[in-house]
Image (cartoon, rainbow, N blue to C red; front, side, top):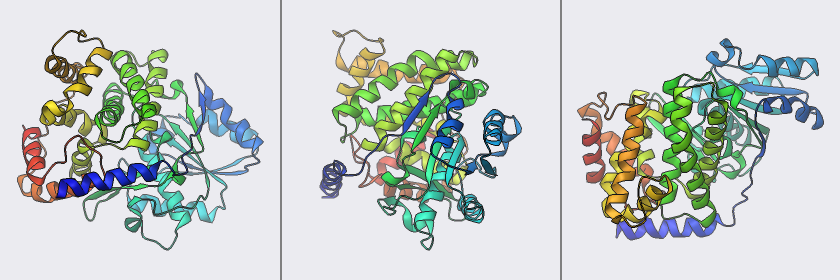
Length: 399
């Protein structure tokens, strides 16, 4: 009966999703495309811009050229650089207060997924200032467009520049939850590979595997459309062709550009077709141990795909042919398993571990319950996991 309830919920949501106010960001793409942003702000007569970033980006000078262009054109920039990995309620409240105090007209989220998530949560807070963030968790709790949002990703992985979701962490309750509403989709996305060329190899690896997880979970899910399947396939092919190149040589701007494109495509796909059980587990690891989200996804992904078994063989076999590790005439189970092995091989080449040593036995009951609650009934997964299924996977990834 519970399986039926989950599938009915997902079917209704898929039907309703067709009528949601979907939109795509205006995209500035290519080498030095960040230079198009100041003229865009001038064109739209925006004179007070709120920049959300983190201290590392500010320290290394990644924004210097952009900030100089704003100053030259008499556009005032107010900078919040307190964002932490897995942005917290405190981050969001601080940024929200600063935005309001300075009467800003637009938000520029400059950085990885964390600054972009923080910026989206500020949008949510601006729309519903008297509603606690925890009460906005889930889908369609905002429904009011407020400030203009520009996303400038400096990593290629989260796809946040294309999505309706912001993921919030509450260190006090050890919870991590999404706020999802189409009004949070950025108005503009700047995909400039030059901004990613100094990304350290381990971050290149884990953020890239985050994008791969998004694309695969969409492709094997039950709520895909022709459009999201095609976007996922393009992303998966680009990632297998370019991620290791970008990992090996960060100055390879062609590989960097292709990874930004892949991340955007995967983000576009999952914001319409959702993710799955890999993410449900990964969010608990971030909440309990502050594990980087991309690293969590990279390690968990092959375990979950193997656990699904033959229910995903057909889709994984198609992806195996797509990345050319199988021939069309090979048995379907061999093709599927070769695809999973190729994921493991890519992880290994980029020195991503194959298990977590941090998981504590005493945390498992709460983590299992939270993963189960996040996944069901929302995520249109190939198989609805019970708490027992989640327990077995946590034990497997613990090594």
